[in-house]
Image (cartoon, rainbow, N blue to C red; front, side, top):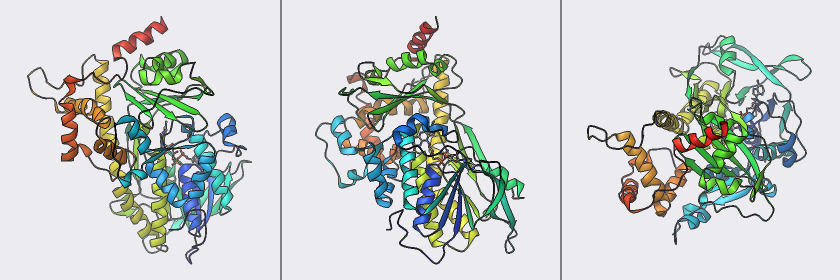
Length: 509
Ligand SMILES: Cc1cc2nc3c(=O)[nH]c(=O)nc-3n(C[C@H](O)[C@H](O)[C@H](O)COP(=O)(O)OP(=O)(O)OC[C@H]3O[C@@H](n4cnc5c(N)ncnc54)[C@H](O)[C@@H]3O)c2cc1C
């Protein structure tokens, strides 16, 4: 395998490739395709120049086009694996800038007495790194290869196209763009890759060139994000982390604490946009009071341990969205493909976006190697790969969020969504499953290495998507723990909704 960033396998099928968007997906595509000998130009609409260091990036980088850089990010095991295999130099640079590897073995030793390991466990390594640091180091790495032309302050405004003589489909031949001084022009290319993120305008640009409409499905995730960054005091020892992150799902609120680089960590509180009381976490008093009320978070954010180094950032209108550019078995246009969030994005809570973006970049590189000279076949191949490797993750998230919204609404109505036995004596299957996850799966992950391993491999996208709760061996292990729930103290997660309402309303008073 050739490492990304080394153009030693230049093929005879060199293409001119334009990438729209210079963030995680666009840079991943730039790295892979330039390594395969293609001439890649990345067009990034944000005009702000690259800061001198990742520390300066946190202070001053204006990334209006990617506002999620100011929110907590988990960088999963599959992404770590892709970087290690394909861009080892990038991994070294990330570690040199203070990012940390979080191996499964360390976590398992903290959670389970005398765990036994399998060779495959070495694959499960997450990266503790701020999203802004990750992007800064990635862009620096891509620029340093000298193989990619990166233009910032250049916004793509549409497509240039002709008609493909064989298929009759619109054939994209370039992009229309606006430079930072307002100059408008057209840039030609053999292939356009849209990596312009969740707010991509590609579907409108395609309509403008006469393409058939794409298929788009989109629905709310049921939460919005508030995040704040903190730095640990010199010499301060934070409370022990069991897993790579703290993740508390209180039903009405999700609290996630993510270690980053340089002794920085971030805390995200995610709540429903419909929950008027919980919305007070948007403001400092509400955010701080809610954080202090969640036991596994409180010790981290206490003034003895750390100090906040950012304001509270908010990101709303989070949706699960899938865009399909092959409709009824035929691409809507040739010469243009979408990767990363521009194609599919989902609830960020499971931390999959950057990993799926890089999987998309790898798929594109592999497909282009296999099919260098047939744009229709290339579009169909990418569609097949996305369907097989990315859509199952997306669909699982959609189902999970629908259930999360139901749970949250029930709590707001004062009902118990974990009440397994209904008034008529029958069993509520959804409540049963929620209860098994909370009182079976969660404790089983703290006592059974097999359960922990399988769920960590799955959560880190190292195993294919699927419903682990349907695996008979796993289910048996989880149910065995569930059936002993009355013999142990319930896991201490945090206040009930009505307790949290009291906390937040007392602030308002
Ligand atoms: C709140 C939040 C939290 C998240 N947490 C995680 C996490 O824990 N782990 C994880 O892996 N992922 C997470 N994600 C997802 C992750 O951030 C994205 O999947 C990732 O940034 C890859 O996105 P991308 O490169 O496709 O798009 P983006 O990062 O959104 O980048 C798009 C780029 O295109 C540029 N652009 C837009 N329009 C144009 C144009 N017309 N011309 C030129 N350039 C343009 C933008 O300026 C931007 O730089 C989170 C997302 C959100 C919203």
